[in-house]
Image: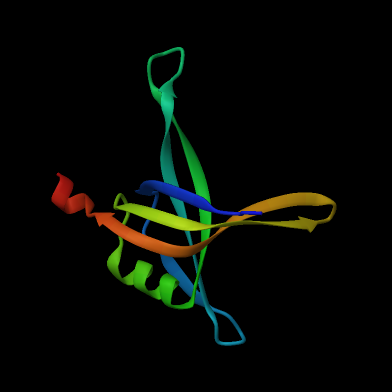
Length: 105
């Protein structure tokens, strides 16, 4: 069996990290990923996908990435049930910095 996600998209905002009570660092990013087809108006719709980053991955992403940068994320989907409601998150196992918004403009 396989649980693997690979995405490339732009960062919605600058990544931030938090330190938990146990000393571990965690961060979240939202990737804007365009769909591969156009809607009725001839525009590409976008998905906004939240990803959770841990420890070194969180620290490096927060240090080197900004809003609008293109990154690749390889990870897995983790589903939890809270109050009988399923919640799915992408847990990033690798983040690749692909391009910088400043360079692209």
